[in-house]
Length: 324
Picture (cartoon, rainbow, N blue to C red):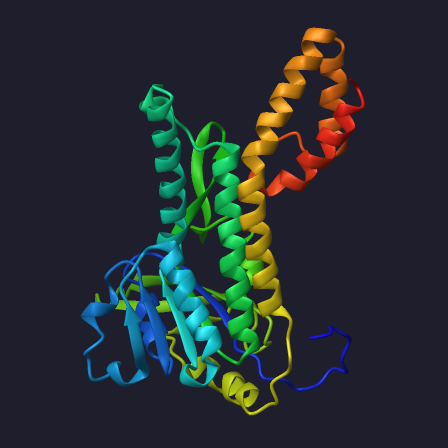
């Protein structure tokens, strides 16, 4: 496919929705109201509802896994078969993201064991965080591709409290999704779920506050009670009738994965080469340490243990060699 600019037009476009909030506020029930839904159940929550007459007809299939690589394979299946699904739900994205971090931590502990170090002192290295970052980019690429094929993607997330210092005392000033930093940029719609007890009836009421809506269906701050698919049905169904367009997101996924694999394979060798070079130059002249630091900074390779910076480190090494 040769990429080029196209004229703006009505196009088939699935919504990318982030549903986050407190426990038991209706996030999972919201997702289950969407039709032809392929669901990744990473927390064993959907099983309670999947045979419920109110929801079971909306479910195409459920995958019971919290493994990141399983989710990537499932995402690929959804992207390759867009006519089989209207909705793709990850419940919850927080659990998948946390799993990536646990895996990175376990890798560091295993590395410490091999080096006969203290496992309890092991922390996730820059390399480990780089791997988490690359995995997140890969998953976000699949979300974009599914959306471009007209599939609505719903990511469920836990909430974290936003705290602020007030005269030495931490006070809660808001809530945010329990995800990576800037995760909200991936989504078209963000809704925060919460519940309140009616002072008169003593019954719980369930609300969702609109924090972002690029479809302009709702104004920011709109509070929806017992929100379901019906809230976005109009936009989704109008979009589904439009023509699909050829996109390059799948090629991005392929190239990203290819780059990730290549960088992962080469990065360790580059780090070894850099350390040997640094040791050699330091022994030759202590003043060269400062020159090496300047080169690393100019090439954006100061965090050279981060595998996502393999290209930067390679360029830095070429410059550092000139100091010999």
